[in-house]
Amino acid sequence: MRSRWMVVGLAAAVSVGLAAPQATTPKAFASDNGIAVNAPLMGWSGWGFLQRDPSAAKFKAQVDALVSTGLKDAGYVYASMDDFWYKCPGSQGPDVDSNGRWVTDGSLFPGSGGKDGMEVLADYVHSKGLKFGLYVTPGISAQAVAKKTKIAGTSYTADQIATSSSASNFNCKGMRNIDFGKPGAQEFIDSWADEFADWGVDYLKLDGVGPSKTADATAWSKALRQTGRPIALNLSASLSASNGATWSSLANSWRIDGDIGASPKGYSFPLTSWTNVSKRFDDAATYQPYAGKGGWNDLDSFGVGNGDDDGITPPQRQTNMALWALASSQYMLGADLTDLDPGDKALLTNKRLIAIDQDGIPASRVIKDGDEQVFAKREKNGTWYIGMFNTDTSSSHTFSLPLAQLGLSGSAKVTDMINNDKPLGTMSTYTTSVAAGGVALVSAVPVSGTGGTGALVSADSGKCVDTDGGSSYLQGTKEQIWTCNGGLNQQITPTSTGELRTMGATECLDVHENGTSPGTVVSQWNCHGGTSQKWTVKSDGTIVAQHSGLCLDVVGGKTANGTGLQLWTCNGGANQKWSWSYN
Image (cartoon, rainbow, N blue to C red; front, side, top):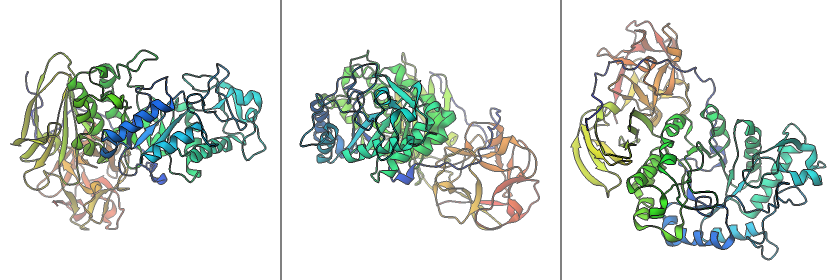
């Protein structure tokens, strides 16, 4: 098959597009709860295999296997119970205690010595050196409303905070929405979170969340924090990118798609399908700006682990793992861990894949051309990780990727990341055949320097172009000058299409609303190929916006840390002169 993607000159303009409106507030990360600060969480989720038929014995068997198979040692440390752990007698909603909270199904999860069945299970998980996860949905049970159960620690009752409309509970049903403007509403969620904390919960999945459930997500986020126990919050599912900043401010991870599973209702296998895996490509690209420190995108659990029961081919299993890793998605297993396929186990414990996931740098999609897609990200040490995906399930494709297209100048040592760190040679263009539904995942280490990536230093102040906040991927984040420190937010990568990429080369220096007037703000925006992100780096040290012909300028010629960047009429001033500094 023909090779794609010819290199063009550095100053060349490509597809025309308009910049989206500039954001005005910084991203509020969830890192203040101290969980998943630098990398997404790893573990096993019960929904993938146990589905609708969990029990303490079945759950413990999976916990034991997490340890015995070496998966725990590889970093998979959360064991999460999903739905069907509580009593559900019918459409009237889950059974509740005297304070309106769900009651554990003791026939499936027996208590012991006065401890609730969930606490007993949490103790078992903790005894294995693992962390325990649990599941809940928004609202309050209709049974609590009918019984007018008391809200712990208050004089209010369940019927005083409930509305007449139904809340999301996909299986048991019978949940009612909560009016969080009513006194006692937050206190009810607080009491439930306190109970989970007392049981030893370390991770909580709040399912059935969407824009209409923002108040529930906010209440649970607050409630978990006030317990004093570190409890990660996961929001689910198919959450809209238009609310990405909201979800990232509330939780440690958020599901950006539906269930990965493809089995008929009530069955465990197949774990997934190619349709369910491949639909994640667009979502991983769209949601990339919202992933970062303290909060991560969740592409759902893997459909990998049980061989033919996975529902996808071996090349597609590599794609499943590689896309999740490049996206720095929450890394959750979904298979029957007591019956792992040897080839799948090797993939699940692949140290290189896990390291790519855990680097905390969500990759950007740099190419989408028919059945061929490329995702890439740059590490702080200058190494690039590049995934070339063939989404055609009927035939292999030949990829020919000039590394300069990523901003990596000169040659690089290329290594296969999936197949035992196999050296592939030193090259400036990587050409390979990719199997149907498969991926070529490689590292590219520049032969010298940092592969075209360096700091842009102001001739006037000696300070570096800097993305405000240090780790923010929020679109519209301020670009400024700051004392040079070698941080990821000061590393700029010029690409062959005229972009100036930052934040691991996943974001671009962008002219606000494609403006052409002196004084137009320059900020960070998700790279989209539009003219607002095209620059010409000139030999005289100036950097010119191609669309307007104006120069990159330090506001007012000031030299203080935090001084913003703008466009201004080119005048040869020192505050418009820049030089490259390479580590």
